[in-house]
Image 1 (cartoon, one colour):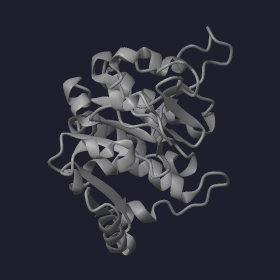
Image 2 (cartoon, helix red, strand yellow):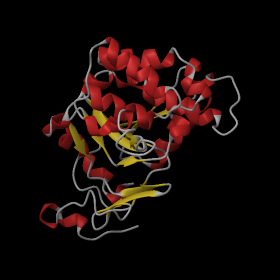
Image 3 (cartoon, one colour):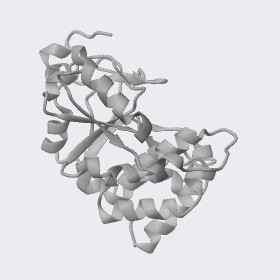
Length: 267
């Protein structure tokens, strides 16, 4: 981590690792010994969030379903996050490939960002959105909410324009950030509570990536959504200064805006 610029966040920028109670002490000791220059603490996930769900699923692991539900709602209300204005969530499988251009927290604050994304994509994820659209539509309709960023939910209504409808939009959950005021807002938490009252996370493997996109579409507007300038890879997804998202040429940091330490990439 230090070789790729995370030390630019400063030794006092807290890093919180969420773990089960049984391994928390051992993990805390390991992090302290390995990264003595970083302010790392380990927060314990509540037992209900660790043991949920109890049912079997033919293609979606219990671990994924627990993580999906946890990062969609309970994470944001955890007491370990009390007192913070912004948070950056990094999946344990995310790998940095270039130095971090600049402090992402300061960037979110300066951009007045409520939600910051790494990548967004149209994806064939119908198997993880079964009934999610219907439940979400009911929630928004009951509150007379209309999408402020309709591009994120165009697949809800475009069946006549696009044969079979377009694919759902995902805001990737491997790396994203935002304000605690957004994630702890009554509207966002009410939306999660409504979703959690249905068996979708358990039975249909609902993805937090789809939920983030729906929430952003209805609860925010373009002025409060910004892109994170962090380069790396997660599974089959990547982002580099030269190629953008997965060689798409989207999300390329202009040469004129690149700090000197980002001119030389490294693995």
